[in-house]
Amino acid sequence: MVGTKHGHGRLRARMRAAALLSAGALIAFGAGCGSSGDDGGSGSGDAGSGKNLTMWTFKQSNVPGLEAAAEAWGRSTGNTLRIQVYTPDDAYATKVRAAANTRDLPDIVSAHSASEEWQFAAAGVLDDISGEFDRAWQDELYPSAVAATSLTEERIKASAANSSTSLEGLEPGHFYAVPYLSGSAGFVFARKSALRRAGVDVSKPPATYQEMIAAIERTRARLGDSGGIATGLKIPPTGYYWFFRPLSFDYLGRADFLNRQGKNPSVAWNSPKSIETLELYDRLTPLWVPGVLALGIDEADQKFADGSATWDVGGTYTLSFLLDQGMDLDDVMVFPVPPPEGGAYDKTKLAPAPLVSAGVASTSKNRAEAIDFLRFLSSREGARLFGEGANDIPATDLGDETASWNPALREMFAALSPPGDDVLDVNDFSADPGAGAGPVTPGTADTLNKLVAGKATPQQVGDELTETYAKAWAAQK
Image (cartoon, rainbow, N blue to C red):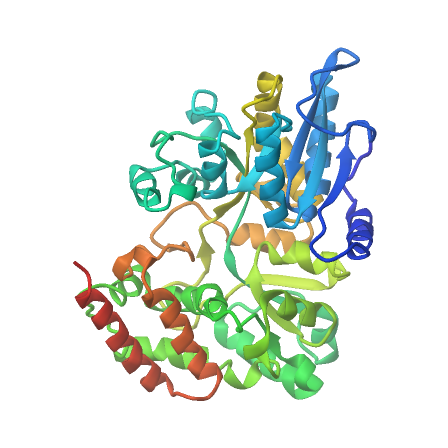
């Protein structure tokens, strides 16, 4: 067995090896406790007194964490679990569906949470695990992660419009996978070595939005263009979802934040209080790295990783990507978008959403063992091993067990909170006209980018968004 608790170098080596293959090729690596000669599938042969199981995933950065959990589980049960990764995502989905047709699935299948897991279940890939995934098990996870993976009647009805993604054969309220990776957007990353060169304190993150702006102004003045802040504004929702929504939520408070998007807003987008949020966001305009509106998400993260930017905006999932690009974990400062002074809340709290789940394959001959591993992965021990190995956030609330983690990981974990009035789910657009399903959400992001481009003032953006939302609500039946 190979322990991977500190396997970042090995993972990056695999990434370099993958880069040598042709673009879009399917990449598979056998890892963890299983024999490297086993080609996968839902094996049922004995390894000593235990069973051999296989788990598939599409996320390379999760492999060290899954391996570490699999090794610990194997020591206590006598079973072995081998982790295999297939990329990119679309090739992985094709691989899974093809294996379902030939009945050559692994025992455990990973899937994008609250979407792909249901599609896999509808296609006969995953079993219904509602009987095993009981309340006691659910209580080990973040409530928001569990709620998001419980299939609703509304989601089933909405899926009927497209036969290729229909979920009509599934049961509302049932579960088909267990989330093991969670997280949220709304985080800022800073390179400590660059901050030191600019004379910025790295002993603690900025406590307020104004402190952060002052620090970016300093790095930009001292370091030039490389002292600026990056994010993938070529995809406009990144600025809206990842930065402006947390900023606005903390400043306005939940009631006014939701009211601004409602049908009869007392706090309209062009009201004085709302204009203040746009003015706060506009303070970033001169601080973005040059060409930020042409940067995709990966391009922005790479710009930060190679030192062309001192600051970066992303989510909990950004950290593992930065490490894959060769960044030193100890050189990364992470913190949630800080609350503005004078706002409703003095601390940013973000709801963890499920990102990756795992279920039991319908063809597995090792269902009991597969369920047992998923239970272990949800336990504090399993989730801690996974989080440390993957440098990411498990779906289990670990409480004070992260005290020994690197400060970057601790800061991310500390910002995630159970549901509450002062907690923002950055992906919740249920207050929007059309509940976020209409054009108003991406349209808002496009309009905000006019600030970044210097093509509109905060007042002009507020007026345009007021009109946009009024028209969208009027169009609702």
